[in-house]
Amino acid sequence: MTKLYLAAPFFNDAQTTRLNQGAAALQQNPTVSHVFSPMNDTNAAGLTFGTPEWQQLVYNEDTQGLNEADVLLAVYDYDHANADPGTMFEIGYAVAKQIPVVVFCEGSQPINLMISQGLTTFTQDLKTLTTLDFTHLPHLPYTGKVY
Image (cartoon, rainbow, N blue to C red; front, side, top):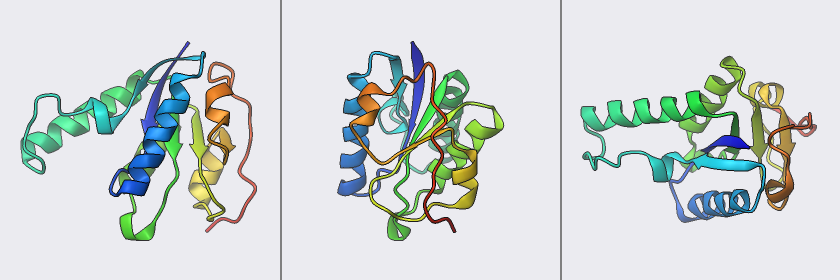
């Protein structure tokens, strides 16, 4: 069973919907035992958004979640108006720690070459997240356009 870190932007309704759809798909996957999602699993202390104390708490909780994860699943939703460098940081952190990275990207937007080269498994099909064997990830490279 796999402990999974779910990295995704949640700055607008469309991104939050995609994140929630991914989380729901993972709940159906028998190879996933636990999902850590920064949107839901940080700041249980209720600190005020943006304060130095909140920043430190969220950073520590997120990096602890990454350190405890067996796999990182990133929802690649790089809408330039609502870009999420946090997700890109989480992907880089996972790659550096040799945590396998699965990238889920709807549509056909180009992907940054650093992300495309660092991932283990790429999918554009949400339904794949319900059946993907996260304990034995296949190498499924990204083959589209990069920037």
